[in-house]
Image (tube, rainbow, N blue to C red; front, side, top):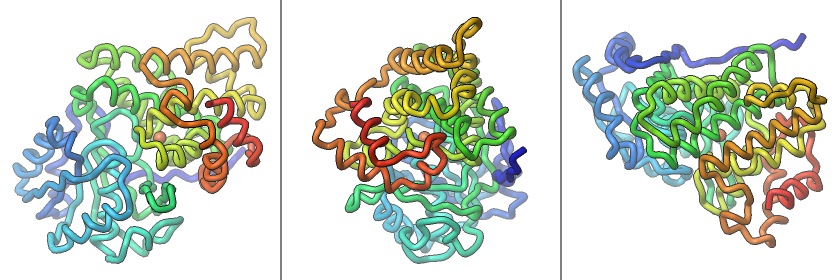
Length: 384
Ligand SMILES: [Fe+2]
């Protein structure tokens, strides 16, 4: 039996109304001056208001930085740190999707230790605790609220680089599904399929454990049972609540077993052909599953079961293949493109994409099948 370790934020609070604890938790830390880090879209849509109000009621003064951008770059992170360096904040609160939360993680390091974002790229490069961080997702997808990684784009090299350190784990992650109720359909679809990819990639990762497996199977069931519903009707609160919990479980999965090849392929694609992270991962997921399938047939057959496929009387191969069909059908139903060419990528770009994928070693290392450059070329070709 494999050994495993579990590394989570100091506290994780899930449930409708869980945001209510934020004031007490900020007081418990002795916080006096908080900075909410969010993006312009989330700021306009409203979920920042209750966070601000509850902190103010707890006598914590609050500033808002609302310039986090989708697919944040290291340059923008450095600029934000420079702009905020005189703020003397004792609490950062990331409110939004993965980009806002990752920006908040980066700022927690830079405002505490100085330097540039580039200095902390890699594993365990952060020298000590950052400014205490609360993470509050407003989409059901990212998982970043519970991970010890923050990903930044470096446009000059077309690469996505990660700060990975236990020191960027949140003191508190609050997953209150009510904050996702207003999430528009496209964003709901993109982030929801990302959550499914987290569950499937973590479940089939070579770092998977009994701990992550238990959570990922439940994540798949929750996501597949509710994703179509929330995209079709965003006011379906019960479905939203289940999606938020499924996405949180997916987050526990990537935090401990990691993402794998679908995420690895999405990084060079995202830096060259800008599209939302979830959309790209969702597009690539069935193609990667197809390629990975022989590496762990029993697990891919189990995935089919969790996705609602009637597998009785089928061989593991047949069941596993139907699982991939189910992922494709779900992606198509919620408007995720199925082929790389559908998002305007020319065939000539595939060779460069394949080469760049090979440098995403951190994620490829988790893949159930160890992929050579030729394997990766094939996946890109099939996905095109
Ligand atoms: Fe993801």
